[in-house]
Structure formats: C-alpha cells, structure tokens
Amino acid sequence: MLSILRPKTGTIAINLRPVKGSWGGANQWTTQLTRWLRHQGWRVIHDLKHVPDAVIMTHTGLAPMTAFGYGEVKRLKEKHPDIPCIHRINDNDIRKETSEMDDFLATSNTVADHTVFVSSWLRDYHANRWFDAKRPHSVILPGADSRVFHPLGNLPWKPGDPFRMVTHHWSDNWNKGFDVYQAIDEWISANPANGFELWIIGRWPSDLSWKSARTFGPASGHKLASLLRQCHGYVSASRHEPGAMHVAEGLQCGLPILFHPDTGGTPEMANRSGIQIGDSLPESLIKFKASYADLRSALLANPPSGARMSASYESILHRLLAHA
Figure 1: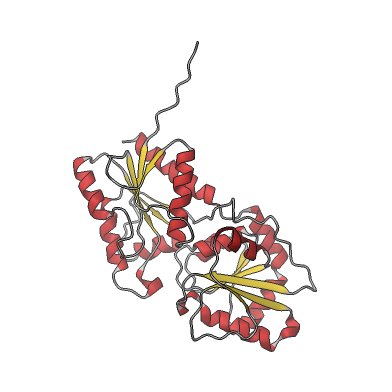
Figure 2 (figure 1 turned 30 degrees about the vertical axis):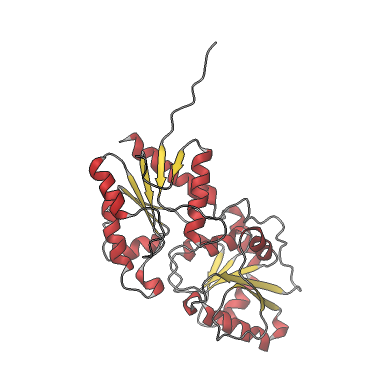
C-alpha cells in the first residue's frame, strides 16, 4: 500500500510569546503568526532552548518583555551561521518622543538576514537614518484577526441617520490624537444638527472632559469588534504611527477612516478607503460623511487581513530556508 509521508516542517523561534487579551499590536501579531504557522505544519517555539531552523525577532520597546533578543540571536548565529533571522521593525523614536529606539533597532538589525517593516513610511524613516534599503527587506502591513474583526453585522450608514464615528486606544498619551478627538467632540456638541456622533473606547487623558462623546472602557476581542461594528466611520489622529493595529481593527470591521496628516503609515493601510483631515476639521468631517459610500465600497474590496499578513511572513521563511 502506497504511503504518503507528511513533509518535514521546520522549527521557528519567535521571540515574543503570545499572551491572552489585548497587549498591543505586537501581541496580536505574534498570536496570529504563531497560530498560522502551526496550522501550516511548522513547529513554533518562543525560546532558544532548542536550535531552530529560523528565527523571527521583534521587540516590545526597550523593556525586557521578549523571551530573547539581539544578543541571544547573535550568539546563536555565531554557532549556527546558516540559521536565518527575520527582524520585524514596527517602531521609531519620533512616535513616542524618545531618543533610544532608532539606535536600538539599528543594533538589533545587524543579525537580520531579512527585515520586515510594517509600512513603507517606517522603512523610509529608518532608511533616512541608518537602514540600507538595498539590503533584503519587505513591507508587510498589519492585519487583525479576521475571525473577530470583520464587517458582518456592520450596517451601512443611511442619510438621515446619525453618522457615528469611533476611535479606540489603550494608551492615554495625548499623541494618540486626543486633541483632535476633543475638537471633534466640541464641534458635535455645538452643532447637533449636522448629525454626527462620537464614540471613544479605551483610555484617555485624565484631564480631558468630553461634552457629547459616548465613552466605553478598554475592550478587546469580540467585545471590541462588536462595538466597532455599531459605528460607521473610524477616526485616527494618532501621530507618526508606523502601522497601527487599532487602524486595522477599525477597517476590518467595515469602517472607512478619517486620519491625521502626520499619521505615518495609516494611509497605506487605508489605501483608498480613507481621507486625510484637511485645514478645516468641520469641512473634513462633512466631506468624510459625504464620501462614506465610495470609501466603504473600496474598503470592502480590499481590507487589511491578518491571514495575508501571516502568510507573507511564511513566504519569506520559505525563501530563506530554501537558500540556506
């Protein structure tokens, strides 16, 4: 009897261990990638106790929240130089007004065989500082878990109904765009006849008082997706975002996006399903609502995708290991 042997799969070490709940975009990235690779037959580990076939390395800032980092990968490659390392870069100094991140990433990147940036904007930012764009690299946009963040149940806005806008953030840093959300809130409060609503989910600065916005505490997973799908448009005024998971979550729930001009990689994620805030915020809001139908159609034709994101990493693994 002819037997069909299961192809031998490789062992991939990812240096960020998934945790339950929402711990930012990096946790969602590693959770989805780990699940995808295992489903595809790979063995995924989150330490270097055993020698892997390949390493995928990211970071969670300068805090030691990863299972291993640049130093451990460097020592591994000194003993096993053929083991390829993919370095995912999703941050910079300008976003959090720090001074150490860019240098930290440049040093870490010295062990990388292939670099993944979460947006072209972030790649160009680092290429202007330290990254050699001639080195092997890719741009892979973030995507959320489509089992949770999807447009099913998101009812289209109809003229005459309130146009409900939403944003959500785990951070209460003003750079997340709270100056703009406050201005939107004040404009809605002063102009109720224009038919807008604003929902705020998550956290916000303690010295910020809302006038008309409906607020919700931090939410994640199905609870968050359910709240998002009750809205019509997403707004992100977060500054210098390399590639924000909160943007992917809103888009995947069927919400076109209004974004800040200094928002970094968000326009790439929005593609043709969003517009930029112009010089006049009220005019931008009115234009956003008027453009809703076309923006939503464009979004539904090509939304972000966590599966596409994960498959792109697997494709790089195939190429690297085939040449090892």
